Length: 76
Image (tube, rainbow, N blue to C red; front, side, top):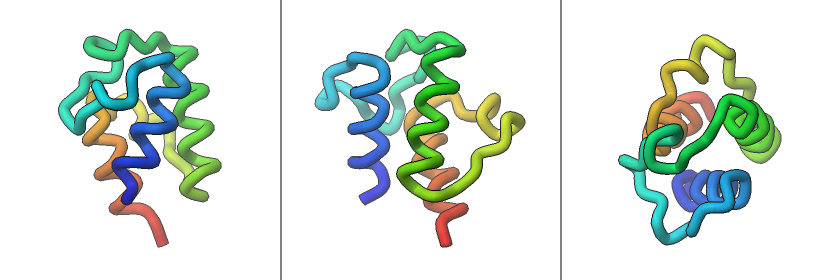
């Protein structure tokens, strides 16, 4: 499931408890990610799911659910 893998990557990247991450978790607000954290996290997600996430799309991703939805919509 995409959500489980995204949760793993987000938790690892942000030193967060994987069990505290939900679809509604705000990346910057709840998980306290800064811009560098987000860049590194996006790179890991791109590698894991073999997709490219344009910078314009990254700016629209506010929650973990936004990331999951984008990946599900753009996987082959």
